[in-house]
Length: 275
Ligand code: HEM
Image (cartoon, rainbow, N blue to C red; front, side, top):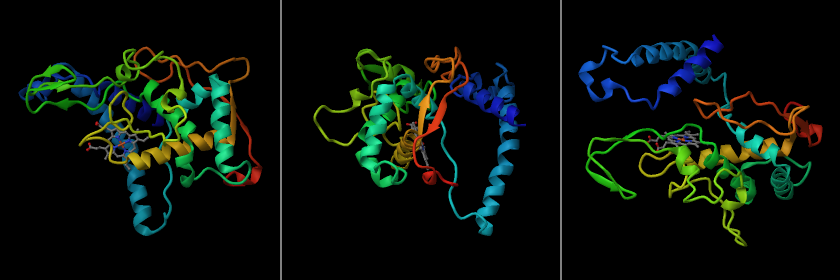
């Protein structure tokens, strides 16, 4: 069932940005002229069959008082960690910053440290720029004729922003394919690095009325997760490999080959939850 679920999620993601004839001619809805409705319906049913019982069980646990603490959410920062594995000097800079701010072997990174973890946040910004989760933002429909960035957008047209294209635009970013967190740090300034990017030079939380409602929570989750991955473990490529293969798959932005990396504990054992 889990394999079916993952396949269904990827099918749904693949189709997210496809245009469908019935979006433009609603009278065709149900006829499935281009065959996409059938694929999406099947994926949707599989996703619900897998996820709904989990969600319902969670709701039951909260209502009955059995569950009292928040758990899970997030994964993703895998690609970011891999970029750092391939450039040990950058990883050392991030780890040193964490050790300096938190102190070695004292405690784990916590929310109050975030404002002083500028290099870690610059790494996260760089990952948002270079490795967007999805190729496009959610589609928008123009409610009136308008001009954006010099382009005329007629009323009713559907507009998609390329997250991939923005982050790698050579007119905006010097050496755009290089993973270089320093580009987000202002020389000699201790201005706090933010993960938000309101000028849309790349998309992290987007901006405006429909931008992410949880930029503070998202920043907190991202920074703490990455900082703890680096604080708790020294990461190296797998045996027999010099680097982690970061090549993207041909038809989506995930890694072409599964991630393999070796973690080694770098803190005193009592600091790891469960010990
Ligand atoms: C690293 C974490 C996160 C990132 C990078 C992120 C990014 C985004 C992006 C790019 C959008 C679309 C904005 C647009 O289309 O213009 C969005 C929408 C949204 N996000 Fe997040 N998000 C994150 C975490 C969260 C969390 C934790 C929550 C809730 C607890 C959340 C709630 C929302 C909501 C409600 C919207 C829809 C806003 C609307 O359509 O009006 N996000 N997010």
